[in-house]
Image: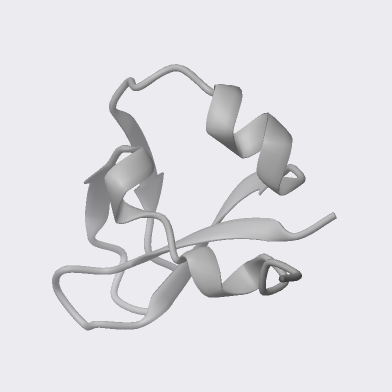
Amino acid sequence: MPMLSVRCQACNRLIPTGIDVDYETFRSLTYTERTVECANCESLQVWNLDDVDLSVFPAPRG
């Protein structure tokens, strides 16, 4: 399963959130704010589902 990542607003690097989910589970997550510390610059990042890098999920088949 892919690890969700968000982009640090301070240094622009991707930060792993520690959450491993498939796309269907991701779609059912609740829309709440979460926090994660950037390992690169130690900035505290507040994020929600809109901030997740969706490129970790495979492209939809069609």
